[in-house]
Length: 451
Image (cartoon, rainbow, N blue to C red; front, side, top):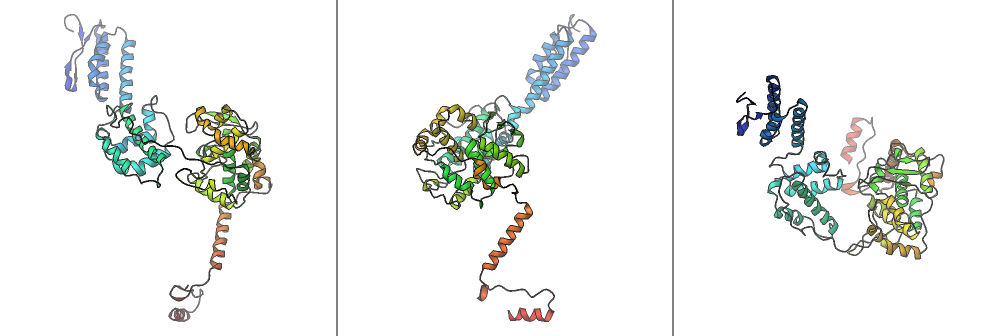
C-alpha cells in the first residue's frame, strides 16, 4: 500500500518491473487476490508472446471492484493465449510447411471463420509433384514473384498438360500466398500482381453419351458390373464421381427413393428424389454388393481412360467420343455430368431440378449445355433406358459378385491358357524344361549337359 492505495508489483520480461494501481481494492485480502490474478495474467500473456498487453490487463484487473469481473478478464487473457497458440507461425515457416497446414485441414481448425474445410486430393498432388520440389523449402516471408514464375516455367509444355491444368497449378500457389496474407498474417501482401494467373482460353468442345451408346456399355458383361452400376448412376443422377464413391447406404432412403448428400466438394448439402429405375436398381444392388456404400472400393482416379476402353469394347464407334485435339477433348468420366445435364435439358427438365442434383450454383453453368441439348432434342434421343433393365446381372436372381478367390482362379486359368497358346521358343532363347521332381541326380545332370 502506498499513499492510501494498493499497488501490485510484477516483472514482465523486457518491459521490466511494472506496478499497476489497484483502484478497485479496499482491503488487504482483496489486494492479495487481485495481485495473484494480475501475476497469473502476466504469465499467460508472456507465454503467448503478448507481453505488450500485460500492462493493459493489469490496470483493468486492478480497477475491478468484484471478483467476478476480475475472473472474466483472466479468462479473456486465456482465450487470447489459446488463439495465439493456434495461429502464430514462425517467420521461418516454409512454403511446403504452410501449404501442408492448409491441405491437412489444420488451417481450417486455426481459422474456421476464414478458411473453409475442403477436399484437398487435387491440391495435394499439385503441391507434391509440381510446386514443392521447386519452391517448397523457401520461407513464406522470402517468397517472391520470381519463385512463382519458376514454378510455371518448370511445367511441361502443351500438349503434355492442358492450359486448365497450368491455371490449376497457378491457383494453388496464389491461394497459399493469399492465406499467408490473411488470416495467417505471415506476410503483409502477396508478391503476385493482379493478372498473374494464366488465362484458360476458349473451352474445348465436349461430348455426351447417347442413350443407345450407354445401353451398349451397360449390357457388356465383359466390363466389371460394379463400374457399370457406377456409370449408370452417374449418368442418371448427375453427381461427381468422387461424391458417388463416398456415398454410404445410410445416405439413401430406399423406402421412399431419395438420396441426401451432406458432404461434398462444395460443402453444399443437397437431397433429391432418385430416378425410379435407379431406385429399383439400388434395392437390388444392395442385396448383391456388400459394404458400407454401393460404390465402395472402386478406383475412380483413372476412370476416364477405362471408360473409353469399355466404350470401344462395347462397339461404340462415334469418333467424337475418342477424339483429342486443340478444339475437342475426348470423353471423360466427368462428362457423365454432361450427359446428365444435356439429356435433362433436352427432355425439358428445369434448371432448378438439375441444380438440385449437380450442385451447380448458377444458371450460367447450366447455360453452357443449352446448344448441345438443342441438338439432342432435335435428334429425339429421349432419356436413358431404365437402369435396372440395362444391366443384365440385376435381373439374375442367382447372380453374386465374384470373390477374391474367384478372381484369382479366373486369373490363373487365363494365365494357363495364355501359356498354352504360346509356341515354344528355339535357339538361344528356348525354354529350358526342368527335370521332373524326384528324378535321379545323374539323369538330371545329364539333361543339364544336353541342354
